[in-house]
Amino acid sequence: MFTHLIQVDELLQHRGSNWLVFDVRYNLQQPDAGRDAYLAQHIPGAFYLDCHHDLAGEARGTNGRHPLPDRKAFAARMRSKGLSHRTQVVIYDDGNAMFAARLWWMLRWIGHTAVAVLDGGWHAWQQAGGAVESGQNSPRVSEAQVIQSLPLSSHVPMPTVTAQHIMENLAEPVFVVLDARAPERFRGEEEPIDRVGGHIPGALNRPMSLNLAENGQFKRPEQLQQEFQALLGDTPPQHVVNQCGSGITACHNLFAMELAGLSGSALYPGSWSEWVSDPQRPVATAE
Image (cartoon, rainbow, N blue to C red; front, side):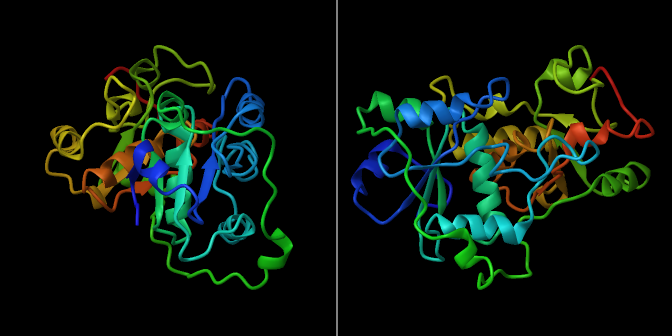
């Protein structure tokens, strides 16, 4: 069972297995680009999931740009693609695993552990000469057929926090907030998306790009562990909350921590886009 990363050669060895492969390529500036790329070429048998429609719920202006969907409805959607408790899932995107890590986290969130990110993503598959196909693959089961009978544990294995938890933590610190955005956004020097730049007071900055080596694949677990521990000091992973602009790249840091053996950190799903929707919430700038 693959639970974190899978390499291209490992996926090639299992061709023909009854695995689920998800293509989650997406471009935040060009929302249709990922689906268009999938329709043109994708790994044979892969299903496409759209970040905005499939990996997020309804954005109401105060809950962030990519809030989590209803957990039971999301589980039903995955079941409609053929997911069962025994299914091995493999996820890929354009290569940096930004969106793949989001789906990895969400599948863990509904209790599915046999899920792995393709290291290097679509680019690594192409470089290895992997087979491709075009068009769209149809769902295996009607979503309506599974939503009523879906067994879903009340236990949520991937913890989350709310803006209220963050506010309370500012007064009485219990956990450390780890921000995955680029340094210039964290410092408030640039803000291309949200209405206010800066960061949550007291947050630390760990840009998601630092999790990757020069070849676009994840750094070794030992190196990741050293880097996170150097930043977090004595803070245990269970006292870390991952945050970014809208809850997407935060999952990249969370995935990297889990890969490094630093398990148990939480996600703030609303992240910066939710935080600044209320002007009463404090904002810090600079380092």
